[in-house]
Length: 477
Picture 1: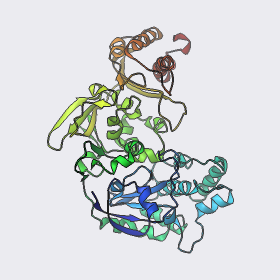
Picture 2: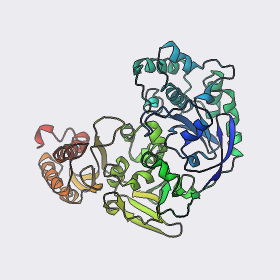
Picture 3: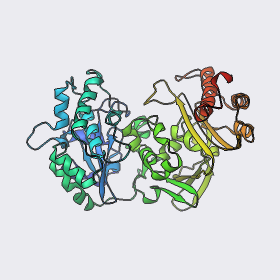
Picture 4: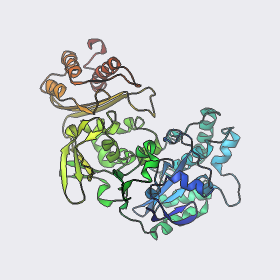
């Protein structure tokens, strides 16, 4: 069922009636705008990278996204920028493009538009604290023929030339336009977006469809079954207002289900609770995936190795479900019934997740092992939150992924460690208890024996990382 959508594509207002589940990349290329390429169609290679600009608090915030995984519904009311939208009116190369030429950073050119777009996104957001690493801005882009060193050199040259930290959004925009990194029409985008009407929530219901899907970021469903989405009963949640935001209410942190991983990692509330969360950020996919993937999607994907699932399960979180009329709350550690099956009913969607904000002498850590250090699915992941008083663990919550058909909360292990002195002897015993709680299987990510060993090592790693002066590696079994 087609729906009417409005958005700006580069410098053109698009008003169309289209199936809202159409993948953005397919729509863009149907217009003969071919700079964004289809490479992996899984969000790994970055050849399809575009910028998505959204009006937030009277400011247009741009994020890099994988256009191969985003339904056009999710760019309704936004500004989408492809490599073509970065070209100057006089057809000269902009400084980023010129640096790529000067450094020999492009060979076949298939991946190059994605790199250019990602670097442009870096400059559009450089004023934001903790996001000034130009190399990290390209962590979702892969080059298969030139080699990354020349690309890194080009990025560093442009970064050194244009330093715009500590400017307001408007002054940064002017600097980028004057420097010809972005075209002058970017100055008009905020006013034009303010005039576009967007739907808060939209459904694409088809008679005869047996399965109902709720879509937020789409980074999982549009990898697994993009064609099926075109002919299914789909409800899009991304713009539903009560599913957004991160807030502190009465000592509880409430996170709307459509909050992206980037929203969580950049949240002042979350960073105040977990000052080291930026250290975990690089383990949660690439920047374009983090910009689209939502907490609701990660939790309800029900993968046994979901990184955000492990993270929030260790916070003893609760899931709030809604059918649009009534709500109910379920502890996350009791949410998973069997492989890929949750307590959520077919007509329900996740509204939010919440957890009690830890206070006092608390400690948190997240660990993950995968075949590739970055941009990979975990073989095993685990997180822990615990409280200490006089070297005694007074309360503890620990999760484990990849060692069962469902994400696990290690009830027995936590029960054993509660009230115990933190030392190697008690940790060794706790690891033995954890071995009785898990039931890993051998698969492409490792044998059952390997996963059991990994979890035992990662449990030790939690405490060795947090208390290196108290726990010696040689003391662990």
